[in-house]
Length: 231
Length: 205
Image (cartoon, rainbow over all chains, first blue to last red; front, side, top):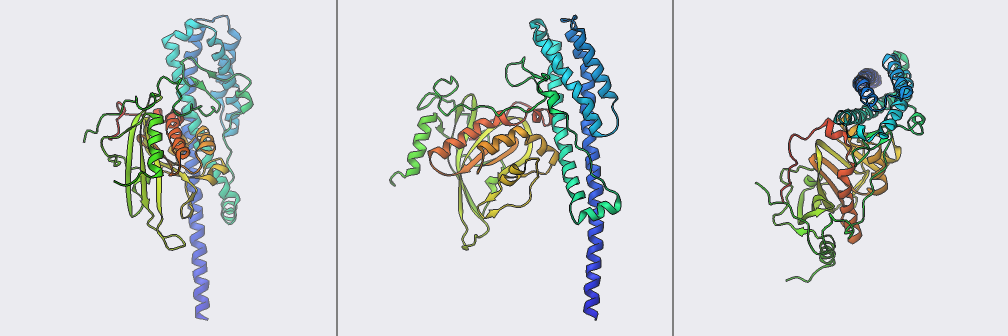
């Protein structure tokens, strides 16, 4: 009798520990998702702040492209005003990304603009912001994926249902709006896309010892070895 | 003097083909605490070479260690790698990408990414998941799946290392190609999130 009671007590304690552990993990995962979303929000705000200056820079050289400027301004207003779920935010971001792509294509047609230092700085900052946004988005989505997996998997789903933890939305900007709409595969700098909203292909790496490569050392020597250690 | 081995011949042909030079100083990984270089009960670095290929300064060496756990035959296997170290324009926390299937079986854990195939093929270890998301982006994952299977990669400070199981000339070329690809593969965002605080260091040789 006593061993049975002990066994039951152990099982009950284990179940209680599982419930507490699982609940606490859900709480920390929710917090992580919230933090990750705030990173996305920071980068989105940074992008919204850059856009008016970028539009003004392009306007100085291509003032007749009113339609594009209006489109960008309108899309920015809609995106920055979007509130609520990640899906709603993503839906508002799509047109902005597409409009920005068209703005960059306009800019590409003006060599003087491409040489403008102010424009180049803004473009570089936008590119940097896009990279950070992509990173923040991936981190947010990875947290959502882990959390949703637990919400839907047994036995943690029991705790999720009992405590009202629901699946969270991913933040995905419509890829269709990025591609053909012409979003930013603009390259003014020379190496690598200056502005890139989509995935990039893996770099091609020429074969070892390619004789046409001026940087490659000649057969049998050539490469300057680094200096000895300063130890 | 011992007779030249097949490995010596591979090594000599490689140096002739690439123009790399034997390193004057032994490369012991000083100040380079790559996780791979601290494994096992015994370890060693040999045949360090250096040079510049395609404008990329690089350091290559052979590395071996004795596993500290026994395999099912009760042996501690000796694992040998060809390694390449290059510099990158960022100051990165430690990050390890290694084959999911290790010498002693499938490795558990690691950070999960959106590609199940990638998760099955590689294990990624780092203390900060946000950093992992930045460092191992979709492009890096695609490249690793296409070109990096069976190889180990590490990021640390301003260095990146690729290591492949020691084999013939083909395997050595593969390690070199992987190392040369790394500076272009490391996401640009790392330079912004983990900026380098000064001019790139030159690794000790």
